[in-house]
Length: 364
Image (cartoon, rainbow, N blue to C red; front, top):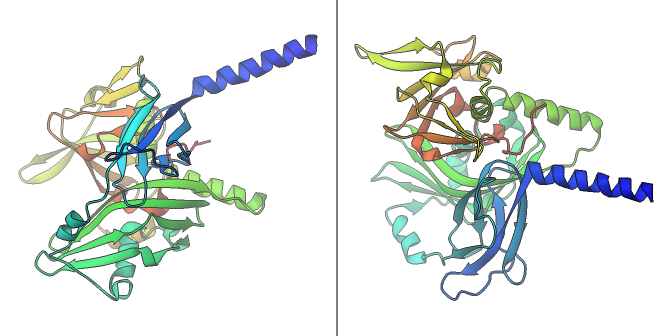
C-alpha cells in the first residue's frame, strides 16, 4: 500500500512539474469556404521542433514548452495561416482556424512582370544558397533535398530576383543535427540596393545521432551557434543577464553625418525594460531608435571579417533598428514580437538558416 501511495505521489509530482513548464494549444482547422474540416493539415510552432497533423475531424493538440510562438497552419492548395500564442493566453483551447484557397489568379498577377528562369539553379542557385542558407562554417554542411520545388523569377524592369517554392524546402543541416522543413513565404533580392529579404516558417526535426561522439559534436555546434545569436540576446534581455552573458548595449546616434556609439551605464533603464509577471513577458522600448549590440564572448568569423574588413575584429557587433514609438515584447523562450518592427544589421545578418536554432533549444 505504501509503495502504491509513493508511486501515485511521484506521478502526481511529475505531472505537476510538466504542467508548470509546458502548455497545450488545441483546436480545429477548416475550409474557410465550405466550413468542412481539413484532415492532415500541418500545424506547428514555427522555429521549433513541435508539430502535428490534424485528424479526420480537423482537430489537433500540441504541447509546447512555456513561452511564445507563432502557430503555423499549412495545407496543400491553401494559404498559410499564422496565429500568435503564448503560455499566458487564455484562448489556447478550441481554436478554429479557417484556411482560404490560394488564389491562382493573384499568384499569376504577382509574377506577370517576371519570367521564370529555365536554368534557374545554374544561374542563381549558388547566390540563393549564400543569401538563404548563409556563408558560415555550418553552411558547408547544409544541403537542400528538394531543389526541384524551388523556382527562380527575374524581372528586368524591376531588376529584382524572386524565388518561390511549391512545397516546404527540405534542408538537411549535418552541422547542427537538424532536418528543417522551411515553408518559404517570400524571397526577393533587389539588385539596386543589394538587399535580400526572405520570410518563412521553419519546422525543425532532430536527427538521430549514430553514436555518442556525433551527439556531443552536435551539442557543441549548437551551443556555438547559440552564443551571441539574437536568440541568446533576447533571452539575456528577458533574464536581465546581458552583462553576465557577454552583451553590451549602446545607443547609436548621428552627429555631423557620422554614426557615434554612446556607452550606457544601465542597459535596462536605457531599454525602458518592463516585466509583466502575470504574462511572463518583457517589454522594451529604447529611448533611441538605433541600438548597437556588442558580444564579447566570441570574435567574428574569419570569413565575415574577410568580407567586411572595416568591422571590429575583437568582438561581434550588430545593429538593431526600432520603429518610432514602437516597443517589442519578449517571451521567456526568446521569441519576440512584432518581429517586423525591428531591423537587424551587421553581424547578426551573417547568421542565416545554417545557424538557425529552434526556440525550444536549451543552452547548458
